[in-house]
Length: 125
Image (cartoon, rainbow, N blue to C red):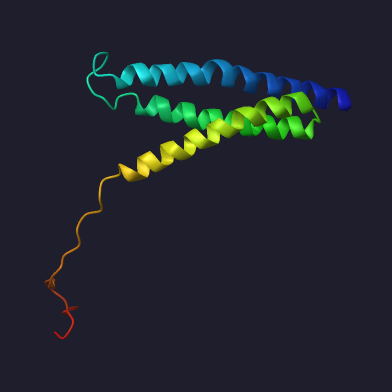
């Protein structure tokens, strides 16, 4: 049973490392290139790639830390832990940027609006 667990943990760690070292930088570069208006129609065309690269980097790093800790592989745990710190910082920065750039909520009516066919919900009415 120990060999099976070692085999699965090795496979998961290897896939997380390949994804973290190849897929995440590829998505980041795709998003960076698409964000420049020279290469595409709009300046926000690469936002999806950048968001995916950030969340995939944080997710793969987290999964790698958990699997390495369970399998008691200290070197892998350190590798994924070191990768996790900047991934969380960048993910937080992206989230703050998304919240800050979100459109404002639609304005609520500032006066009493009566509806037909029913009673009046206006104060004092």
